[in-house]
Image 1: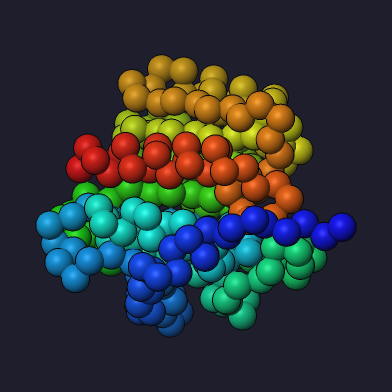
Image 2: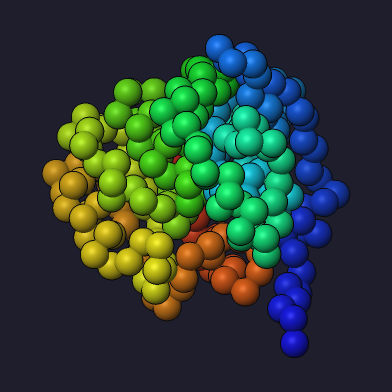
Length: 239
């Protein structure tokens, strides 16, 4: 029997979610962004969310609306050069296909531009939330001193982006699945070791969970998704 999610995040927040579409100018054009948050952003911090390879999916935007009362939430489309938009979670081949020929350094630079764009529209304090693909992007930005904190939900390949770990001093909150084949236990331990001397870091490894536990579908776990939102809310509350 096909998986049926009993009551989707999108349904829960459909009545309160307002998403504005904007664009951030960069050297090669403009990065599309979805913006959630109150009209008076200057009194609040910013939250830049770099999504997974599936893009700024509706369930993600809906879940993030739970944070829109305490931050200007900005969700860029990292894959706008590759056609952009949202790829259904079931269409993994198309999502992976966007990585062929992908210019990672260009993407990293453009996401930093989104962070600065957000900073100019909030109280000047911005944290990052990296989901899957977004994890390394925001670790890189944190190494530049661009962020006041980083949260990751099942961040992928971060163990390959630790060369500047000693330069990252902002609070870090990592959430992984214990049975995630993309980020297996040895990768988690490498990340943990790299930040062993960090003054404010926490690791949550959810027992039995696989990759994509914040995405609606068979891998979704409500408790893990809630804990990821709570960790993000905690860092925002300090700003």
